[in-house]
Figure 1 (cartoon, rainbow over the protein chains, first blue to last red):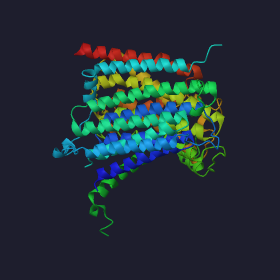
Figure 2: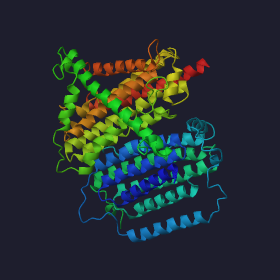
Figure 3: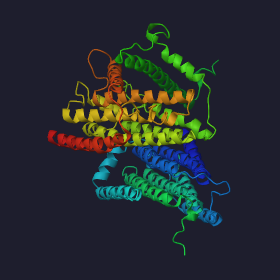
Figure 4: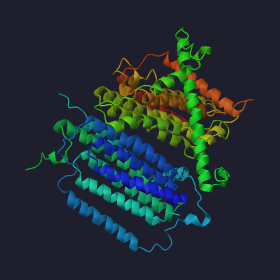
Length: 172
Length: 102
Length: 336
């Protein structure tokens, strides 16, 4: 077992274990903390896949941004958990079946594809050469993908205005 | 070397766990967190395919950046809505969000 | 005997041993520096207030004061409040403390003396230092105390607000150098082409001032120390912490101070560039100069009021950083 396989297995266990704990914990703050662990493990996967800028962006934006605001809202809407109220709602069993079928369906589809040796990365033939991605991503975002880039910035402005509007206290 | 199918397997299972969370949790914040799990599963899928099939053209990673940004925007608006609802109804239990029920 | 000697081990184990050794060395160096900084802070603040500061601990000017403080905090009783969430309470100081140390990895302590030559150096530093906000939020929640939670929320709001101008003020440097690699940024500033005055002094000075101000706010120091001020909500998020856990928060703050001073030296003052002396001496000199300015500012300015605090970041520092980026772009365009 090589180092890379071992690291991959470690990250996989961390991701899936944390995700399971996110959907099953009673105390909502614990769910948020396990989600932070999941997001960190995904950033680890990005590093394994050579996406260095994306790994740092994941930590900066998702963990340092989205999770901070989620923790804020959890603390501001702190509802003590009534002991007999369960984590799951009434339809959890059909939901479990649906998810199981989805996962099995996807898995079977992937298993049926013959990957024609595309399973292994192209760079393996010359050894793994890691190339930093920031410059290429920057050029891509400003030349070929400039239109989606501008549209996403418009969406962000709309989200900002919407969030401020929804949380405004009514003037009375 | 870790083959592509292993990354895809992790992505699929993560998506399934997120889907279960969305469908089965009572707390609306829990549902929002499960949606983030699904986004991350899709992102992992995109980056894995990019690395294995076209390592020199980074469209997959650019797509992932857009998904991260849009997920952040969606989380912000969703959380603002949750705060506004909490101020009115003093609860974050999805079963009680039934003002429109006939 | 041969089995113990590392040369006989498989290459993987040797690699891991070398990495552990590097981590231990960094930890030791930073811990010693932080303890020195605590003593320095006591002396500097004392002399600015016309008094003497520590004089007795260890003999000459109380040099062992930090060690004495550390021993005192270690032997204090470890209290977990009853209404608190025990695991969150215990984990919060760790999460506030570890990012401070992890950020030192790409910092170049001299020419080619960075621990890891990261290509995304500055982005990595900003991403990891943003993780300590989570520690503060957890500390506020985990204390089971309404005032701690409010203090934690206020501190987190301040930290998140000041992250924006801090990151934006560094963008002119990245525009000029063309890379986020901290060692490359240092190399581009060789022979006194420091970013503070080289392509455009206006851009350099504004960027440096915004970065410095935002860093002072990020380290929760006066004039931005609402989260820690005793006259505010008791002691804010670390009200319920005593002993070694409080020591962790304390150490994290000083580690961030040294990190921000080091970053300021690397990004704007050429970090290691100088004549005659070796590069690491110049780096340490510039960093300690900036640390002294941190302490000087602490005892010179009064504290910001909490509403003006956030308005200062969003309504002044952020637009100034944006204007600075535009100016830097125009400079580059005019120079080419």
